[in-house]
Amino acid sequence: TSKLLEVKTPWHTKLLRFMTQPSDDDFSWAKLDRRHIAQDVYLPWFDGQSLGEVAFIWDVSGSIGSRMKNHFAGHFNTVLETCQPSKVITLPCHTSVVVEDIGEYTPDDYPVTLECGRSGGTDMTEGLHYVYQNYPDVELIIVLTDGYTPFGKDVYGIPTLWAITTDVVADWGETVQIEITD
Image (cartoon, rainbow, N blue to C red; front, side, top):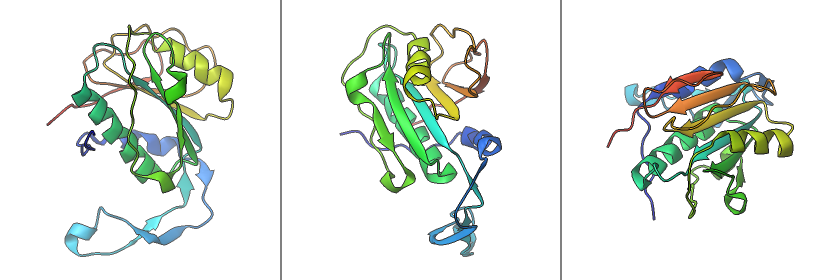
């Protein structure tokens, strides 16, 4: 069993500009805004906008150990909790997508454990192609990887955020470096 790691790198705040779908309610008391609780201020969570359908391609290649997979799960859950996407598809990928371990989640499923028992080489473009062919409603793709992968080209026009654990910068899309801490 893997433990969920707390995310210290706030790169998910970059996703705010992708939050374009109007939400049913502006505020929700069912969920409190945790950013203010430490000061004993209890405010409702603002639900004015949310993310639409998001695909999370997460690298399960041989260079990704269990510690990094736990960090990927932490980043995934932070996005699921804070950005409230309508649906998230998780696609573990090495040189191909591990189809039997694809998951579909909503914020109601938080927290989620990401698991994949297979590994291999590295080619995140296979995950991108799979998304393009099988999930036409995806509005954003997030790729969690160490960056040691081919990047391909942006041929479909879906906004893509590369969350990379090293100093590698993707050839296209937007790159953010994520910190792996204990």
